[in-house]
Amino acid sequence: MLNSIAFIPDGNRRYASRANVSLAEAYKLGTEKAWDVLGWLAAYPMIKVGTFYTLSLENLARKGHEKAILFKIFERELDSVKERSVLSENGIQLKFLGRRDVFPQVIRQKMGEAEELTADNGKRTINLALGYNGQSEIVDAAKKFAQSCRLGEISPSELNEKTFRNYLYGNFPDPDLIVRTSGTQRLSGFLTYQSAYSELCFVDKYWPELQQQDLDRIVSDYSERDRRFGK
Image 1: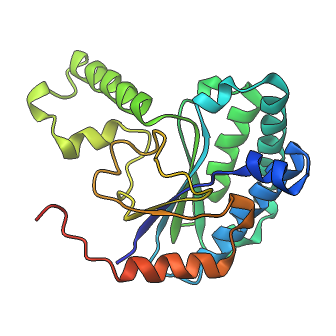
Image 2: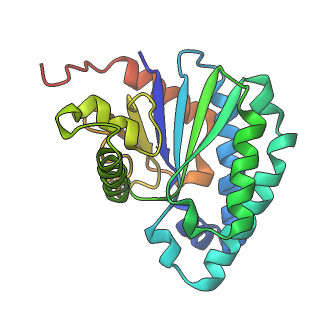
């Protein structure tokens, strides 16, 4: 059963070039598409967790004007959380994964406010990976584990695949399916630890072009796959 799904919303910049729109407009369309997807997921009550690769650590190395556009969009969308009925109507709580310290204080504060505002929505969880990289997540988890050992809270002998999850940015069900748009076929450091047995789906459309029927086909295709987990 498809319980946990993840998205790599790729292709905003290439869409801007092809559609002859500004980068800011393409990112705006991409952001609205993400809100659309939250609404579309409501048609699938078995999906309890959705995770979006919103901004990688590598993305933060982009040119200053592009990063400024992204930060402005983040601020605006975080402010809009209280007005987004899709969250309250579908019981969606928001959580953020990644290194928050790479963002300005105002964005970090708004992340916390969004999490607090939606904390009582218990039906579904939407994880937004911001300032994220899968290898960095593992390194940060190892550092937290080492600190817990130093404080005597846990011993090295207690570490295993299950307990290690407690030190990751978020402890949620591994994605059953990871969807990437734009036709690019790689995970780009997304959920490196959690994706060991995830099914993959690569969609030959840029993220702003994704439609509800595309999601329907993705879910239908997944239902026909035979997952054996190496057995």
